[in-house]
Image 1 (tube, chains in turn brown, red):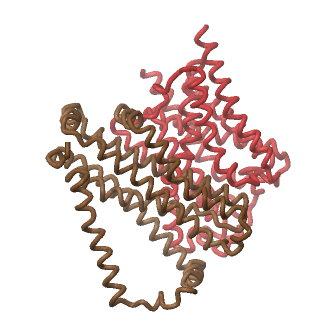
Image 2: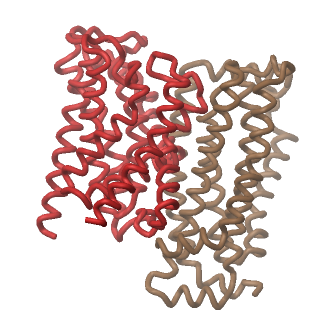
Length: 244
Length: 286
């Protein structure tokens, strides 16, 4: 496994560095803004966590792009057959990619925490958003858990199309809800966030959310492992779908 | 002889590089209460041993071949599980000891841990989950202490002694924080020396368990995971035992300094001793 990990880092080191810089642009800009600007007086507490969250979402989205390209870069028949011919080659090849993804997500959380701390040092009214980063970390893993087996099974191009099907279904479901569902919670958008933060301050609600997060995190960790097993199983089936 | 001198020089270089940022930031940003005034400095401290290892290996041209960066031997899964289960279970046993022997009035049923099942389950689940997300911080320390210092010391002395020396160096690395009451507070007679001694004992015991994990897997990742989850459970789970449901602390038979020592240390020391014995046994059988 160490050899495949080394190969992954050796081949992608410049991408890793570029993506690390790229994905931190938004969080750093937001941190600089929140840290010093006198115009940000109203940005404090929960609202500041939301603003930091926007930067964090951008960071995870950009980081996600790297993680997906890492899989697509290896879509060559000769390489696939060579890996399959080595002892435990498929497991190691796929495992290395899942581990690099995990490490990359961990590094993202660490860097976001440092950037958030940097902002907090300048302005103690803003929130420490570590819990939010933890949630985004698991959302990231959840997305990759679904995406990787599809990329492995159907190849990069086709896998993306297949991935779009459930996303389109969710968007369609959302549209149907917006047309026919109960929209009363969103009726007064000016007080929506205030009501949300008020609800979060209730210990019962906070406990329920924490429990839900804990169960989801555990489920996603298991799902991530199962996704790896599925990718190993499907690895050779995806060869016919490679573009080269 | 030449090789021993080289190893000593490498160890010295690593220690200087690991201690320097800790002592500079620790004193520069100290709030004189055992914590730091800068969140950025506080959150980056754990990363410095790893940075020190990288610089040391580059300067000495050792390379990273023996840096234990692989995910481990075959069937290492159980050690990864142990790395998460041990720090989650430790506060449970410590909480029991706390309520059996140290709490003066009130029962374990009055503690925050037993009061709200939903919140307790949430804490038990989210602590390892957060640990996994924040594992890079644990990796920051473990790459240095277990991934570099202990193996280097083993070239000069037997494994148990290497574990003890690593534990002492690791504990003293926390010096700028300990000097002002980190972890053990300031409310005891022989402050701050008692805190230093307590930290040395804790670090030696923990070092034994973390070294055992590292040696069994040939990887620093289980130790990194265990380290960060341990930091979180001690702050989260154990505090829930030490407080009543309304958030007020229990009345103890001893001072808070001894509360921590008497409740957490027995389990840690037993585990540490068992690990040292296991590592010795393995060495003899080798």
